[in-house]
Amino acid sequence: MNIADLTVHAVHVNHRGNWLFVRVRTDNGLVGHGEASHSTADHLLVATLARARSRLIGRDTSDLEALFLEMARPNAGMVAWTAFSAVEQALWDLAGQAAGAPVYQLLGGRCLPRIRLYANVNRAAANRDPLAYAERAREAVEAGFRAVKCAPFDDVSWKTLDDPEGRRAYERGLERVRRIREAIGDEVALSVDCHNRFDVPTARRAAKDLEPFRLYWLEAPVPPWDPAGLAQVKAGLNTRLVAGEELLGRAAYLPLLASRALDVIMFDVKHTGGLLESKKIAALAEAHQTPVSPHSPAGPVAHLAAAHLCATLPNFLNLEYAWGEAPWRNDLVGGAEDIRDGYLTLPEKPGLGLALDEKLLAAHAVEL
Image 1 (cartoon, rainbow, N blue to C red):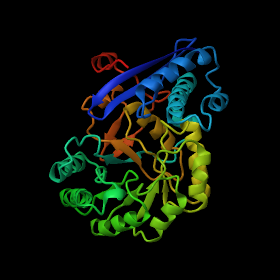
Image 2 (cartoon, rainbow, N blue to C red):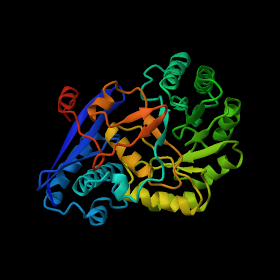
Image 3 (cartoon, one colour):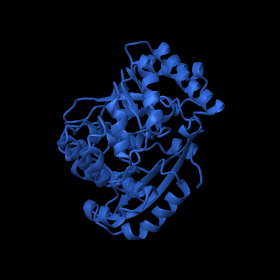
């Protein structure tokens, strides 16, 4: 089975941007889907895939390792890795369809009957006023989620925390967390994503100030390419420390694992080389007795791809879900995201188990 064509379809979602879907068609008429959203540069990603198209046409769809070596070069950057990751997801979708089996069966079979999710309310929260932000979190809990993540410090920089406006921004961030905890109650897990806004001293300060809110985890207080800094933050932390979403390929995770800098490893199947490379990262983490929680503020295609992988991982903790971003999200993939009470039940259809709705695809299409 060989690749006959590759197309990219961009869908506008909301104020946070677009979803980019990749379709790979084979010479026997099958169509596989992958997702290349959030690469930091949509136009450049589309151009990258356009250049790769001629190289891909005619290739055997089972050439996953060879294509990884060709397209996901170590220094190629986020856009190139995201482009390949989408193609790789689509090739797994095709493999499952050809075999008449869900992708998780091809990846070793599932360890779990359902996938535990947490609701990332950031992408649905256009208004970051503390009360409005808390309302989004409350709505996610009402929808059945028992775990919520927020990013309260996106207007904060460690460089300005000693300035009046910087201190006010920091206090607003703490107020957001306080209001969310009040809105969701004590029994719902609450995590805070810092988006690398701090250095080590200010991260320690933030961790101390956040202790009253009983966090499930603290995410990315300092950049993941600083294992020593993360280890310093972790040493004084009373909750889990999580990071890694920006890293590309398994080699980038070795320093974090070897130094025990994190309690949970986070990778993103959209960026780090696709499902096979992500499974290798998870295996490295398992060898270091470290659980994994894939980063996935994604559209429904990448989310389902990640869910198929998660079902096969012995050290899986939970999977991110971009709650409330678009009311037509599940309809776009033909109802394949079966989410109830904060858990996703995987589709049993061959491949990823989805089909893009052509009318919704056209209705929300955007030119890049």
